[in-house]
Image: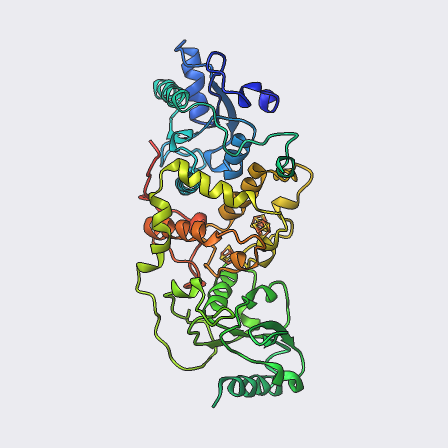
Length: 161
Length: 281
Ligand code: SF4
Ligand code: SF4
Ligand code: SF4
C-alpha cells in the first residue's frame, strides 16, 4: 500500500492517467492460490489489483475494508473458499455473515455497491479470478475514482471555514 | 399505591433481607423534567428513588464489572440491554435482582413521547424478579417500527451519501456515543489505540465516518436500540436511522432480535449452512 496517500489522481480525476485501484483480500488457501494459478498459466488480468494475502476469509475484519477506502482504494475485493470448503472448516461461514452485513451497511451510507465485492474463488478457479478482476476494473472505471471515505492528509474540517 | 412508594418499599425490603448491597435507580434531577441515575447503598436512602416518564437513561451500563449483589430498576430498554450483557458475559445474573417496570414510553420536556418509544414494540424479556407498574400494551404494530427509514432506503446511492456525509461531518469525536453505549464495553477501544492507529485523530469527514462506521459495525447484532448514543450525541447524529436499518437486515436474514433471550448466540458469532448469500457470487 505504498502509493496510498501521495497519489495525485485522488485530488484531480484525470481520465488520461487515472487507473482504478483495487485492493483484494484473498484467502491463502484458495483465492490466493487461484490468483497464483492465473499467473502460472499466463492468463492476463488487469494490473489494477493489489493482492493482500490473509490466512482465511474469516480473518478479514470489516475495518480492513474501511481502511482500504481511507487509503485510496477505488474498490475492495474480498474472497475466500466456497462455503463448505474452508481450510479451517467454518471460517468462511462466519465471514459470509460479515460480508453480507458490511455490504448492506456500505450501500446504505452511500458507497456504490460495485466498489465492494465478495466472491468465492477456489484454488482451481483461475478463470473466475481473472473474470472477477476484469469485471470489477471495468465497473469501477465507469464509476470513476472513489472520493468517499478517503483521508486527505493536511486538510481538516476547520480549514474550510 | 403510587409507583414511587411501591418501588421504595420493595427496595427497602431487599436491603433489609440482605439480598442486595446496592440498588441502581433514578432520582430527581435538577429540573422538573429531568431525572438522573443514582446508586443507593443504604436502606435509609431508598426514599430518593423515583420513576416517571423522564427516566430516560439506560441504567445497564452501571452493572458492568461489579461483583456486588446489585438490584436494578429496569424499563424495557434497560432490561433488553441487561439481557444482552448477560449474553455477552459482562454481567453475572446470579448477583442481579431486577425490578422491571412496565414502561409506557418516555417523554421529552414538552411531554411528547420520544421517537424511539414510538417505534418500540418489545415485550419485557422474562428475566426479571419482580414487576411493578400498571400493565400496558405495546403501541407500535410489528413491522411499523422500520417505517421511518424507508424514505432514506429509497433514495439513490449518491443522495444517501450526501445525507450521511453531512451528518458524520458534524461529529466532534467526543466519544460520548461510545461511552454511553451498553454494548461498547471493550477495555481498550479501537478508537483509542495509538500503536497501530486504526482511527485517525484528524478531524475530517472521512475519519469521522471511519470512526462512526466502525462503531456501528462493532455493535451489529448486539445493539438493542436503546437510543442512548443518539440522545447523548452533542451534534445529534441520527444513529437510530442506521442502527435500525442494520437491525432490520439482521432480523430478515438471520431471524435474530437482540435483547430477547440471554441464552441466544449473537448473529455474528454463529452461522447456518443455508445463510443467505446476497451479493456474494
Ligand atoms: S442504540 Fe446506541 S447506545 Fe443503545 S445499544 Fe445501540 S449503539 Fe449502543
Ligand atoms: S467502538 Fe468498538 S472497540 Fe470501541 S468500545 Fe465500542 S465495540 Fe469496543
Ligand atoms: S457522540 Fe456524536 S459527536 Fe460525539 S463522538 Fe459520537 S457521533 Fe461524534
